[in-house]
Length: 208
Image (cartoon, rainbow, N blue to C red; front, top):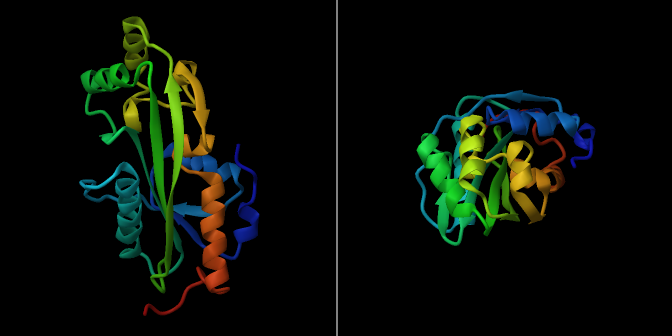
């Protein structure tokens, strides 16, 4: 799923602006060495689903930039969309069940906005990964049992494809890691772009 390409960026000090266990797991599988500094910020935003995911990823990276002097900050935000309707994290079990009922039997999109921001210089590259995910028809028992498992809480769209909801999925396109919350191929591309812009980036310097 994610190749261990992180060793190519050993010279960069990577900071993950997220407390997500799934993003941490993916970075570890990619053999990155990194620190974690979760961003706490307002997540209200407007625009298309892709625009919202990008805006929030950039916002999270900038929140962490205010707290550190150097390093490449990785900001990420994942959301589920059905048309223009955006599904974030459910507020409670009832909200989770309603999301799953809405997604049942349909193809929806998963967007993960990703931002790589050099804390010292403010240089930034950002993009969003996109995947299509198709759910089979879910029975009331499917939804009730899944919600009772507790897994939907804290997940965009109220499900984790790598967990119990995997059996709901009949098809998907795009990066599997994007659906989990951190598109690996996109991350490598963004870090390569950062490195091409400045070979010393991420090593620390005075702010502009």
